[in-house]
Length: 238
Image (cartoon, rainbow, N blue to C red; front, top):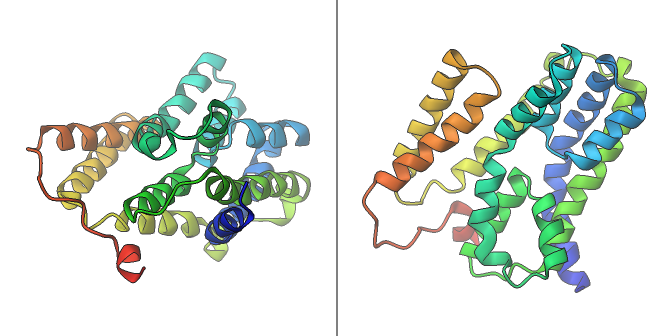
């Protein structure tokens, strides 16, 4: 493992870790409120490692929903990760089987976006960089879950101090980083409208997968483009 590349990944993932930390603590607090033990909450963060689906899972557990429906709902929220893994496969094909196993486990939204951007800029996607970027988010997520589970009563309502907007704003930034790609606007618009409609007519968490599938269908139906993807704002600065 190359230390320079590892620490480059750590530096890249550090701002994301800061933005995600309050939500790791919030999950720990909500998990305990829904009947989880501290160990249960930490175990779920360590094994599921997906903030949105963890929130959905504890809500359903708290309402005594059938286990199969909990699993199906979590899958619906996380279906996009199947698409993520297919998209970055070309960048990690040189990883060993064990490295790929760990890489896809760590494949959350920002990990996907940064891997895509780095690959498009022609920079190597090494396992050292990937691991550094992933671990600096993953390990604090578990630690913050533990903190939230123990001291959850002290967190209060995150909306009162604006913590609930941190991750949505960051994810919007991730999406806008691809704004120079061909047909970005119609695909994002259709995906967003389909997600809103899905939320209204079907409900959460299915609207996430509905929006993603609508964008994929439109992208597949549009005629192919001979243009190479335009650089993102980050690439222009590089």
